[in-house]
Length: 315
Ligand SMILES: Nc1ncnc2c1ncn2[C@@H]1O[C@H](COP(=O)(O)OP(=O)(O)OP(=O)(O)O)[C@@H](O)[C@H]1O
Image (cartoon, rainbow, N blue to C red; front, side, top):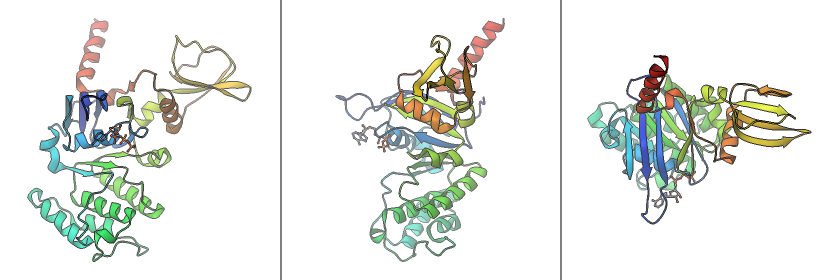
């Protein structure tokens, strides 16, 4: 646990688009420490883009708070790069003009990195990068994504919020983007990226936020989240009062169960550590289970309350 300012810290965050409809995000409380590469995962309509738009300062919460780099989202905006799912760009500009426009927009920060932007837009070794004089309106979806990402990298932001950045990139461009994200993360940039392709996130992300139905279900270092669960295979009966059973399914002549516990229950069980995909899929199929946040992912107010409780117990 750390008390340094988090990249994102939400407390009781809620957002509705309409008073007549249920909240799209509700009671979301979590902390994303700086320097992490965070996968934001959840089914369609879960509220991932809404959360990213709130963090980018484009929406205001209905209730609760969201701090970005210790500031309100509006005040943090210069230090944050946001790439929307729709990748909005000026269709009449060329790629080179778009990058020059990015430089002008970021002049006040003095941080614009032309080379980083150009590397993403033009710089593929196989020569398939974008032509500087190509007009945005003539580009494919994946090519526009490259331009939007080039602007984000040029900004040299402390926090990058990327809404499905890989979705329409070809495999080589994905590999290039992953490399660029890893380099940015090594320099201390915090990255949040939403995706539906869990396998894609496994190699590149070290932190996880799972949102389903507008609620935060899982949060924390991926290693810690998976280590808190056990995959059991066997034929014995499970006592649900002794551990949280996320999912129990028939398999072969016995059954497989994912439990939130590191203890192997009595009986003839084969116990394994699940991978992140197994943990995520089980939580996506079973949204009734209690949420789980690791210490690092708990908001400071919760960390303080837990420390006070531990001190009381120790006294
Ligand atoms: N501008 C808007 N006006 C009204 N409702 C909206 C608006 N934007 C999103 N919603 C609704 O909010 C809910 C969450 O949408 P959001 O785009 O945040 O989900 P998501 O998790 O990003 O989904 P996906 O994975 O499909 O991109 C959905 O029910 C959606 O219909």
